Length: 153
DNA sequence: GCCAACGTTGGC
DNA sequence: GCCAACGTTGGC
Image (cartoon, rainbow, N blue to C red; front, side, top):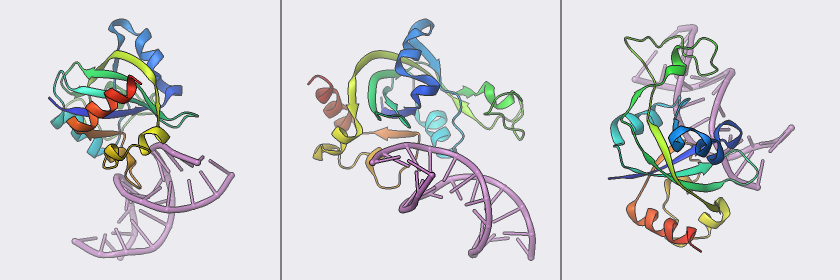
């Protein structure tokens, strides 16, 4: 069992959009970074905990809790010529991009980036490190517990 | 394999 | 819109 933080731009898929889906589940399409892909493909297991993070928006921060509900499978948007995520170098036989399904378990208050930065217990979080741009990052069990506690405040 | 140029991310 | 920090591309 591991924990992850996954960024989503709310104008693409917000936590409310995800909650409105059948089974409150979204396929995590559009990841086009190898490191992030590898976390989904090689690191994630069904049942892993996910911090659902809103990025590139007026109030960046953690918007809810979720869990991984599938193993990795090919991202269908890579094969769709009309999609902005289309990848001409990907084939059905040799897909490049993988994704998992993520189910929202709880919408929370918005735990802002500023609030995260203010917590010394979270100083080592990957997302808070200078220059970090990865859309999917591992979260330690201690960081997860601390954040869950903060969300109850 | 090197590395300059270019593209992207994402907070501010 | 700015810009720091990376990642990717492609010529050599």
